Length: 85
Image (cartoon, rainbow, N blue to C red; front, side, top):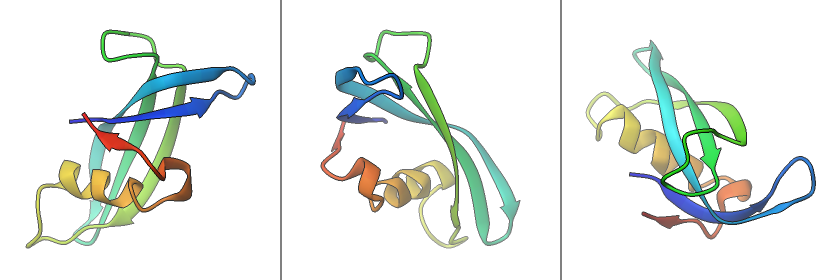
């Protein structure tokens, strides 16, 4: 599971159809998860060009933590318009 979205890098370059993947998911408590979103040029790239950390609410009776992390980031303005890949 990942998201695809064109973004402008911190250096001002456009990364067309960049591949954004949730990684390093950790339960901070019974109700909070912490995770990173790493951004890659494409699905075959091994070196990320960007990494951001996030926290979000975790519902114990909901879907798995990774799915909940993706659900959360899709609500954020910087991932608006992202498609599931």
